[in-house]
Amino acid sequence: MAQTDESRSLAVLIDADNTSARYATAIFDEIASLGEANVRRIYGDFSVGRLGGWDKAVQSLAILQHQQRSNTTGKNAADIALVIDAMDLMYKGRLDGFCLVSSDSDFTRLAQRLREDGLVVYGFGERKTPEAFRNACSRFIYVENLVDQPAAAPLAKTAGKAAAPADEAKSEGARKEPASKAVPMLQKAMAGLEDEEGWVALGGVGSRLGNIAPDFDPRSFGHAKLSTLVEKSGAFELKRSADRQMLIRVKPSPRRARAK
Image (cartoon, rainbow, N blue to C red; front, side):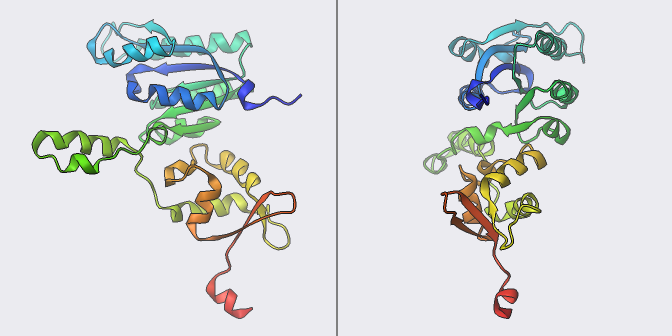
């Protein structure tokens, strides 16, 4: 029997130094669609007030807190502890995958090693995350895409210091790219999959996109579904096949259309 995403047993390892607690609930909501978070651990020096924001999330989400003091300036004991635990869990062979929650490129080699052992690796981090770490993951999810776009308009009317939270929230929220910017990547994913009339199954495009760009996400362009993104881009025709499968093909250029 084929394994479904929901049946995957996952370990969630969180780098508290490089992840904001405000994304915690949204991250675990997303992980619930990927599998079951049977291992939940967070690493950092919680003896300092800087990580105090994680206290509530650690309790409500049943995350096991690993205290790692920074004994030497410039050395991150928490990162090392996270890697050691990941390798220990990998060798036990009881998991199907890992969720590495960090925006730190130091975990690039860890993601590669886990995938070499046949495990799926989901990365969660901010848009500032270096490309190397994003591409080392099976799939990389921007945490900004997991939170609702803040309603900043009412706050914008408030004068003085009260306006600052709206500006801050706007910068944290998902700054969406126009749908047209996704067209080159979509066309790249379609290459070689077309039938004699140029039609491609959207499901196949989605699978290919995950291999080409692990961080590709329709939500980065303001749309929850790939089909909506394709439609809103204006560059493709869409139709349903006899078996109700969504098919797409590139719209002919105006010049080619006139020639016909």
